[in-house]
Amino acid sequence: MGDTAGRRDAAIERTTKETAIRVRVEIDGQGRADVATGVGFFDHMLDHLARHSLMNLTVAAEGDLHVDDHHTVEDVGIALGQALRKAMGERRGIRRYASLDLAMDECLTRAAVDVSGRPFLVFRTRFTAEKIGTFDTQLVREFFQALAQNAGLTLHIETLYGDNAHHIAETCFKAVARVLGDALAIDPRQADLIPSTKGVLA
Image (cartoon, rainbow, N blue to C red; front, side):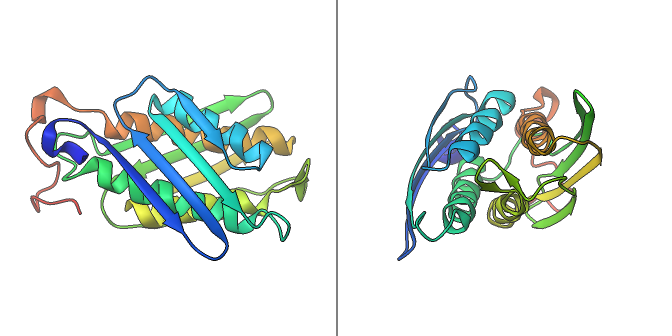
């Protein structure tokens, strides 16, 4: 798996006392999602992450939802980040950088990524409600923190304005999906090179 055999895909299984997670990522996919976490709104957001990045994503999660959704959402972010890191391999030939302003009705969110191997999250998004249905909006940040940390991404997310909490969350996931898809695309001018003067991105 990874890019050593010309394919960029990976699977991760992660089991703790709180969750059991199985994730599979195909970077060069068609945007297909097969997602079941037990958290309906989160499944909806992961569908967007797959569809708008054009990665194929499989997620099966069982968690302690009787406590709350926190462990499940965070642990999916951890496992997905680990799978993405593994699938990227040496990160040879990738564009590496991408940024985007994404609009949805009254809401505008900006995302930028450096697939650097140096994990860092800047999250400047405030929600207008604590819950979207039963989903705690604080978990949006927790997911992206886990994803960035485990995939080795420098990830910036900023919502410039927005009133509807569902729209705010959705623009975050869609914007991140688009910048990930763009940054992980292979640049044919440097398909055999690692895009760093250091010669390594890991």
